Picture 1 (cartoon, rainbow, N blue to C red):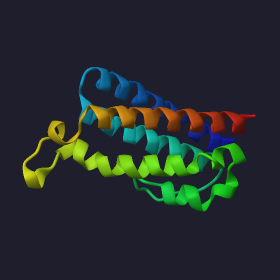
Picture 2 (spheres, rainbow, N blue to C red):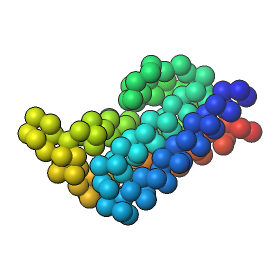
Picture 3 (tube, rainbow, N blue to C red):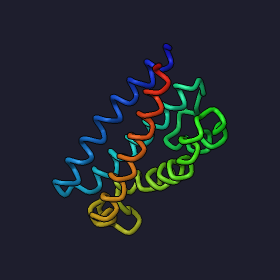
Picture 4 (cartoon, helix red, strand yellow):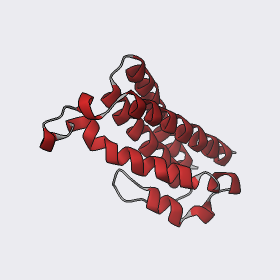
Length: 141
């Protein structure tokens, strides 16, 4: 039960990131929306790993761990793992760009992260959060 409490705490943080990402998207702060979306996905995935007793590496992308222990999850969640893994990988790659832009080409974050990137990121974060919250709620019972 203690692991589920920790997972719930991670999800609380993920939900706050998602809400802020949605606000940033609406305000046109696309790099920040991507960054917050990545953090939401990371916290959501770490929550479900923690909830099923899996220790994960302290890195931003835990999708390989998630896939390696897929048998620990219910079938409905297993069907979503490829999408969740893909979302994590995509957003981790955009994380650095959302902070620093394309430094080598002297491009700002606003020049390399656009509205479509932010929209996709927020949608991926919303789906990841919703799926992970559903799983943790099932484990509460």
